[in-house]
Structure formats: structure tokens, C-alpha cells
Length: 549
Image 1: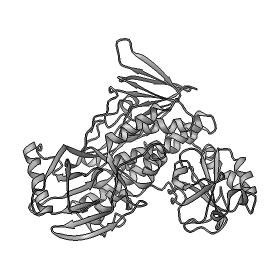
Image 2 (image 1 turned 135 degrees about the vertical axis):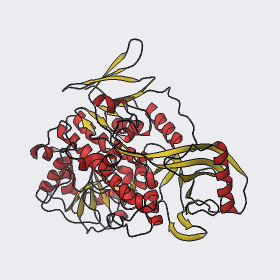
Image 3 (image 1 turned 90 degrees about the horizontal axis):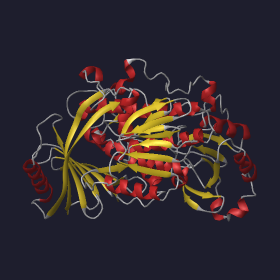
Image 4 (image 1 turned 45 degrees about the vertical axis):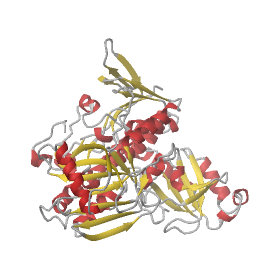
């Protein structure tokens, strides 16, 4: 088959191409730029622990983990959240992430990056997609599928005629990257009503003594001059340190957060991902992290269909899951913004809304609650129900939610964390207390292992069998079925052949065909009704529904 065409060479497009290569699928990345990554120190991203763990499988991620998250109001401490390697996000410069992804792609024989490739035309039929890049003669590229990862002003989205409703300039921040010594070694800080400034500031450490500082600005205020920004830096450092300490200014900028959601994330054999599909970033929400989740969700599904191991209906679940999750995030943002920014009382609508403003901001930055927690695809067409898997049992993870990162042992005796094994095929995890003290050659022939290994070998999807001493909420001999993107499909009481097979069939989308999926990208009727418009982000209120932010 033809390769998958990936339009856009930012973090999402590069990560998608890498993930496809790991699944044995060739891809061509069309990069409109010259291949050089601009080193902007103030342009950073925060990756949640599970996202960071999956990226770190491919290369050493680097970045800074925070020892704690502090919140202060005026001069008074309000809250301090202790963090460790398992709970802290990873904060790094986006250019460092992009360079590492590019370097990893250069080692992949199945991936190719084409620079100077501006998309100009797009055609598709039942067998594939054709994309024409701009130039004197033009070049046509033939692909099995195409994914638009080409940012907020996505050419792919426009060529597909997909609307992009939502709100413009929800939040605006002045940003600076400094090399400076601050009073909190390795701790991030959120400071409301900063003394002498009267506004909100966030300080987040990066590697090598660098900090990113953010100041909240009026959404549609005047331009921030260099002199005004330097005044903010000096005033903030004085408030925190008592005087202006020696510092090196590395980079500055202004970041504007929009809220938009594409009406559809699939049109036939073409898909949207990352900022081409949605825009967010207010209240600490993380667009790069969300984009990498898009890539992880879509890659294994494209791979199964590319290898003809799953029906095309499987691809409809991408929009149902990811668009649904991002829509819920945008609705939570819409409800939290009036409360956090002090313009209304929607406390009863947002889960946890009765808590303070600083708590909600902390949730967004640390990946907790409706503003930041990893998504749960509980109502996904790929999550088996009681009728499909009647013997399923409850564990500490809801079906459709990300699995806990427990220690696991592979059949060859390799011992790792569960998240380190994600990204290739289905994982079947047996909870077997006591196995860690035995050599794998002994327990492979004992208890449930022979039967379970035989069942896993005959599943309709490639699967790996792992063992763990314990899993939250699970009893001994529980078997967990984990999707390639780390979400739990189901938990079963032992090696039940029929239930395991039914679970694998559900994960590969075979049941969606039986329940009416059309395989044409209709995504469960997402075009119907205004309730899906930008996930309630206010397009109707502002009257702004253009495709351009």
C-alpha cells in the first residue's frame, strides 16, 4: 500500500510519523519549512507523565520535572503540592522536542521528511489520497491516508471544507525565558495578585537554570512593548527576591490562547490532528500534550487498517474519542473561565467548581480534574460493554481510562514499567503476586500462564503478555487488556478465551461494523446540532465562526 501522508512537521506530525514507523507503516512528512527548527527558549511545552513516558521510549526526553507546585496570593502561601517522578509533568522547550523527534525520524527507514513542501491541492478516492505540493511544476504525492498536522491555519482543514468555530483571544500572556536564580529550587509557582503588579504570574523551571515566566494580560489589550516587558520582569523579580537579581534574558514573546474545535476530525481518508483540529491553552491546558495524544490514538488505528487487520470503521473511533475528549476539555474551560477570571458564578456546573480559583488553575497546569486530567474514553465504540464481555470485573481503572504505570515483567524476563511497553500492540497483563521473585522460566509453565499464553497467541491482534505483582483494585489472576495507546479495554477474571477474543475484536473495531458505523468519517453525527459547536465554547455568543483564529 501507499504510505501515509503527514502534512506538517511540528511535534504532532513528527510524533505521528514515528508512531506509524513503530507499527510498520511507511509515511511521508510534508514540511512547508526548510527543516531548521528555530531555537525559541520561551516557547515551551508541558507533557503529562503518561505522555512523557511514551515519548521517552524513543529518545531521551530531557526537560525538567518539578519538585512541587506552589500557589500564592499576594504575599501569602495558599497551597503546595509535592511532586515526584511519577506525578510531575515534564517541562521542556518545544524546539528541543522537535529536534529530538526529527533526529529519531532520520533513523527510521519507513519515514521520510520532505522540506519546502507547501500543500496546494488535495484529492481522494476509495483507494487513497493524492496531495499536490506547490512549485513550478508541482509534485503529486500518493498516499493511503492523509493526516493534517499543519497547525491553526491548517491548509488541510480548509481544503476539506471543515469549519473551525469557536472563540478568539480567550487569554493572552506575556512570556519570558530567563536564566536566573529564584527562591524555589526546582519548584513551579503560580502567584495571584503579585505585590506591586496586581496581576497573575507563573514561574516554571526548565533545565540549566532557565525559567519561563508568564504574565496574564487583557485578552484584547494593547501590544506589549519591550520596555513594558522589561519593567514586568524587574518588578516581578523584585517582588519575589527583594531586589532584581542578576539574570540573562534569553527570549520573550506574547502567547494568545484561542478556543476552537473542528466540526469533524475525519473526512474519508483524511484526518486532522493537533492544532489543525482544535485550539486550547487557557488556564494551563496543554496543546502539545493534547496533540501528542491525538497522534498516539490515531497511529495504531491507521496501522491496523493499513495492514488490513481491522475494518475501516475503526477509524471513526478516532474522532469519537479524541474530539469528544477535547470537547469536554473545552466545555470545562468555558465554565471555569468566568470563575477563575472573576466574572461570574458557574460553580455548580463544573465538577470541583466549588473549590477556589487557584485550585482550578493548579488542576490545569498539573493535569488534574476536568481541565487537565488524561481523558477517559468510557463511551467509546471500542470499549466493550457488559453484553460484549459479560465476565468483566472492576479494577481501580475505569474501562477507557489510562492504565496505572505499574512494574511489569515480560516473558523474556525483562522488567520495566507498564507505560514503557505501550505503543506497539495490545498488552495483556496478568496480576500474579509472587512472580517477581521467580525466574520467568519457572512461572511460564505454572498456573494460568500456559493457558493465557495460548489464548494471547490466537488473538486477532498482535498482543504481548506481561505479568505484574499487583494492580490498583485488582485481585490475583485478574487479566487486564490494554490498548496500544495505554487505555484500558477491559479487566477479566482469568484466562477466559471467549471474553479475551471479544475484547480484542472490540478494540480493533469489528463490533463498530455490526452496530452501524459507516466508515466514511461521519463520527457519530458530529455535524448535527449546535450542541457540538466548539464544545460549547461560545461561537454562537461571539458570532465568530471563521476557519481562521
